[in-house]
Image (cartoon, rainbow, N blue to C red; front, side, top):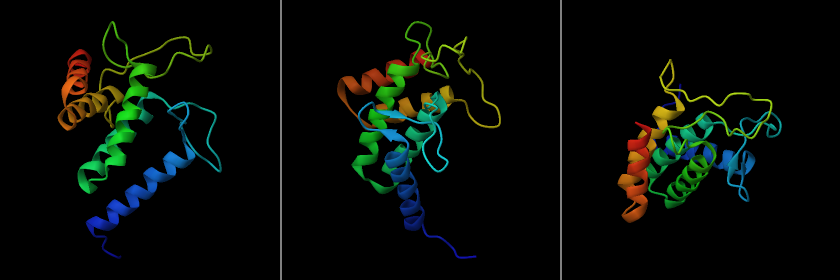
Length: 148
């Protein structure tokens, strides 16, 4: 088996992120689609899709230093906040609430075999607060505190 070097991992991760941006992301609405099989699904992205994508983009930025990954992570965080954030009760709902067939908007408040979207989001907000300054950093800190 061929050993991969860190630069190769970075290149492959960047290629995967670019695929998602080109195939599963609408630049006009700033929204993600949930999945891809021969073409993007009609299902909109859920909280987990945004939270884990933002986390991956922050990893790409921290490792490779390309500002475009950080800028996209910030953009996705803004979309996540507008679609899923419970501004009164704290935390993020799992879905947007736009689908009338979904009767209940739930918030995952515990981790299972994988971390919940809320747990990943808390870490994302703390990471973002450390990467930006001023009112944006304060906003991320307040959202993290409200989430926790």
